[in-house]
Length: 292
Image 1 (spheres, helix red, strand yellow):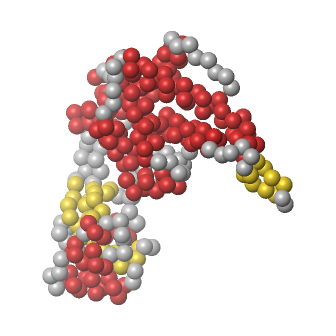
Image 2 (tube, helix red, strand yellow):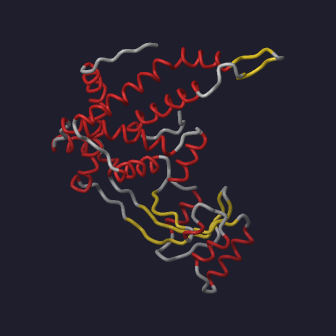
């Protein structure tokens, strides 16, 4: 299973992916082929398949049954999921991993295809649509959650910066001199910055609060005025030329600004809580036979 799971909402999706991969792995081999050998003594793929079936067979079958029940219920209730809805959920999942690139890397590392992810997101969304009409999130529940978690919604002081990262001080001083001579910061970032994650975007680092960056970088960034550019700042990553783009003052959270966010969060929590009982009730309506 993908090891950097960030969002419990997607646990069902990745459980299905993982078990599905085991199923493919267990059935893809000719039974007489060799899986491994030790001093010529063979372990056949039939032995491997048998062991996989013993360890995971029941879980794999249960996942397949679950998916089929959800699909049959969706057909019965005329519930469908659109490609755009899958795209939106996929974007949220990618963001929970730190972006599209990090997510793609996790898929590659775990040999999971994007098509498989999309299929399991569809199953999740079908279940959500089937359960959703029975879920109610009240105003009182939202306000209670807000009051109990208000600190997490308060906006701390933040700054938005761009930077050019150089490996050595000499290069950093050269870049700073070019900036002082009127050369464009963004173009210099593309040319000189060793931070490949943002060099092509002019070194844009977006907004961040205190405690999120290297101490030396953060101290210099928060001390700048808007549009000001720092002298080279040394951190463990190299030498930074920092430009302050914008600032946000600290601000106490207001319920109205976070109401929809809280509603979505509580809705997801209630879906997760309701799902096991809903599934068991639906399974009980079908004649399900297992031949393992």
